[in-house]
Amino acid sequence: MNIDEGVVVDIVNAVLGRLDGSSASQAEEEPKAPEGGDGIFESMDDAIEAAAVAQRAYLSCSMHDRAAYVQAIRDVVLNQENLEYISRQSVEETGMGNYEHKLIKNRLAAVKTPGIEDLTTDALTGDDGLTLVEYSPFGVIGAITPTTNPTETIICNSIGMLAAGNSVVFSPHPRAKNVSLHLVRLINRALAKAGAPANLVVTVSKPSIENTNAMMSHPLIRMLVATGGPGIVKTVLSSGKKAIGAGAGNPPVVVDETADIEKAGKDIVDGCSFDNNLPCIAEKEVIVVDSAADYLIFNMKKNGAYEVKDQATINKLVRLLVQENGKSPVTAFVGKSAKYILDQVGVSVDDDVKVIIMQVGEDHPFVQVELMMPVLPIVRVPDVDAGIEMAIRVEHGNRHTAMMHSRNVDKLTKMAKLIQTTIFVKNGPSYAGIGVGGEGHTTFTIAGPTGEGLTSAKSFARRRRCVLVGGMDVR
Ligand code: NAD
Picture 1: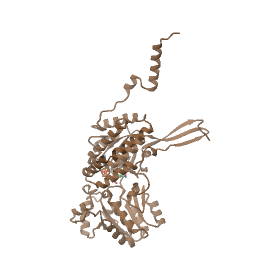
Picture 2 (picture 1 turned 120 degrees about the vertical axis):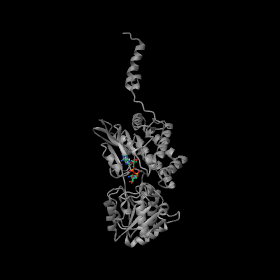
Picture 3 (picture 1 turned 180 degrees about the horizontal axis):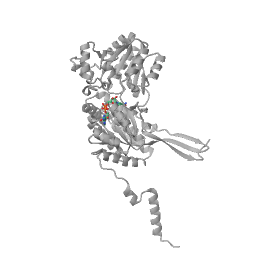
Picture 4 (picture 1 turned 90 degrees about the horizontal axis):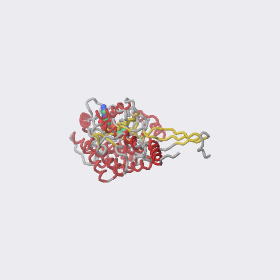
């Protein structure tokens, strides 16, 4: 039978086109991304749809590609000009924190957030063949970020979420809008230069609670990650979607009589004053065994603490810094310096004062409320066991972070077991718990309530099993 050669070529092309999905008619059916400049969209729906198109394209990229895109994010943040700009803008826009410390935190997020190496594969082989269990993407993640670490959170979430194969829609705090949008723009340009699909990291031009709500209920969002206070964590956990909640803390530090008191005094002041106490892990109250208290206070003062002794001034500070409900800090003072806060109550101090300390009882609002200010109450206890019990009470069951300075291994173990915090730092400043002078990776999304702990790429991935029946066992 004679068949025209041209007809054969047409048939083969048509079949091949159908197999690889590249025939003209199918290509036209591919969803198109809404237009958005540098990942910034007017509407939340458009941002999410663009991120969904991007994630679908991302599925075709190799692990080598993913590593290159993660590196592009690290590089653009580590560019000195960008690093300085986002650090300065963060402080200026939110009115919170300390420029030098923002530089450290942003650099830390860019360098020590794990990439694709976090996604380890489990393999099982046997007579029945080979089974792989791997970390696979969720799809499009909705990430809600705080005012306290606006850029740090966008950096570490972008790296971890993209390493795991997702795209991400950010819903930044409205008070950190400009710096967050600027960073998303920088990341988009860097990803485009590296050849990544457009819109892997997106946001909206006007972040708002309405936009966050629209994001949380959008069907294309497969996972929600909230880094913020108790309200937003509760909201994402009630969303009906897979959610990671990284919520509030109130980290206590316990000091007993066996500790290296000189080191403890310095570590506590350094940890508490880091970024004016904005990190959710930072020391928020000191609980010290009576016999060690005077020497600890002496060493804290030696390292930049200023003690307020006069009760009238302490009362003034309470009225200034704690809302009338007695439960929340006054936002205008969150992340302000010790010197600025003291100025407001008529106490003038040198620039080297980093922390304001005062001796109070357990019920004092400064002990109970998560202030996020370099204001550190000190409570005396008769012995270390009483200190551990008090620390558990004032941590309020957040299971977030706690510190202890002691040389008594039994007591260190006792507190670590009983307080059940995600991070427990022994004999160091709080920031050792996120990889500054302590071993381990960093993150600015510490998920106590939902249990992922210090999140990384694998926290943003699903476990999937792939089974090959027969063969492949080489034992
Ligand atoms: P916040 O709860 O006021 O805001 C966090 C984010 O949630 C923002 O984007 C905000 O716009 C959004 N949001 C808040 N309420 C909302 C609502 N009802 N509907 C929709 N969106 C809402 O917190 P903040 O002041 O920006 O950050 C400080 C808090 O976050 C502290 O409690 C701190 O401990 C916590 N925090 C926790 C971690 C962690 O890793 N666990 C990290 C940083 C901050």
